[in-house]
Length: 126
Image (cartoon, rainbow, N blue to C red; front, side):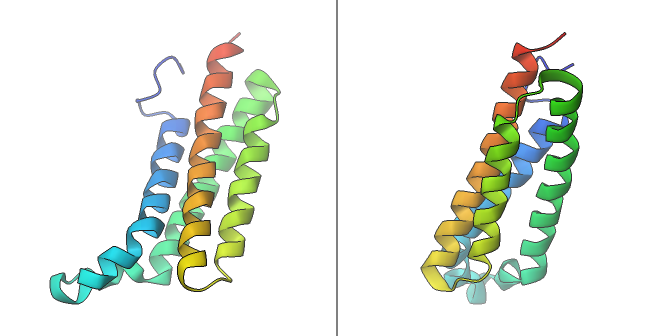
């Protein structure tokens, strides 16, 4: 049942993964500044970024497509998640501040898509 957002449902997991991705991207410059001193330089690894992106795509695909097909038939969440992933894709080709800003915006958009999907599921619950 999708009545509570903070539970083990796909939208909550997708929202959490997307927000972790966005926080990772936005906090990365600060963490790397102190990374050499604290052993956190691994967090800047592209494999970590790729893992978060893959996890976000997997959870978004499972949750949003299932919500659309079986429940609400509204494309809003899917449009928002596609926008988010497009911004994340563009950020992968940018350097410096633009990469950080765009990846953070994309991650927040993906997280917002999960919130939208959750609200739609509550609204159109049959």
